Amino acid sequence: MSERDIDHLLTKAANKFLLVNAASGRAKQIVEGSLPYVENFDPNNPVITALREISADKMKIKILTGPNKKPQDILEKEEDKPEFARPSALERLSRDSKKAAIKKKEKKK
Image 1 (tube, rainbow, N blue to C red):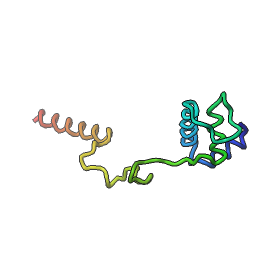
Image 2 (image 1 turned 180 degrees about the vertical axis):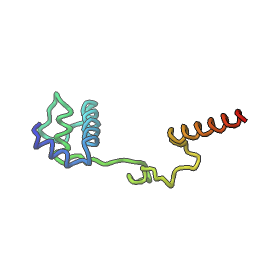
Image 3 (image 1 turned 90 degrees about the horizontal axis):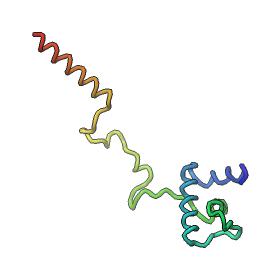
Image 4 (image 1 turned 90 degrees about the vertical axis):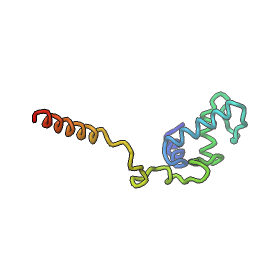
């Protein structure tokens, strides 16, 4: 495949990761016996066949997130985090060092 073809394929998906996952999933289907959607398929290389199908708009790449969720709902918002969430390592270390300093002062007295 030439660079022009790859650039054309990247316009079909939001990013390279989605493109690769869609092509690999379709290639697995072809290996398992699914018939190709394009006429000029490569019987020895199902990945090339899957990429040709995506390039020919025979397949659409969508992000599936669940029955009632949108992709934006997947991202966790700061205000949605529970109050009992585990603090960062830096916060834990600073608390521990403060507690240790207080204990040392109490022992000296």
